[in-house]
Image (tube, rainbow, N blue to C red):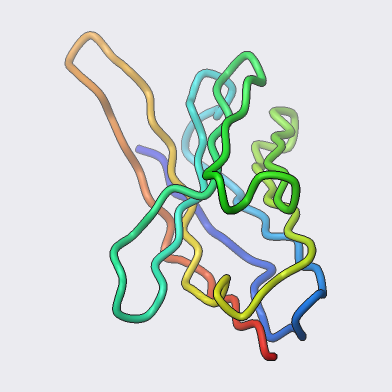
Length: 119
């Protein structure tokens, strides 16, 4: 069982930056694909960025060049550095951990952290 706890959200002005952290406990994250998702008011949850165990990353098109996902396996932590924030980035941001096992995929979610970008 993996527990994920996000932090770093808050209120920021448009054009500003925030860094979100996701700390895991219960298992090493080194073999997991880690992702950040977000859910804006009235919208469905969407992928923000993902990083797999070998460090390969991918981003949603609207986040490319503004957001950077990284991981520190020694600290069992995944980060999302967000810059040039826009009001439309306002959402609850969730951390996700995914691993394939012989019993099938296992997926875990954090409780989310609110990011609010004011214009």
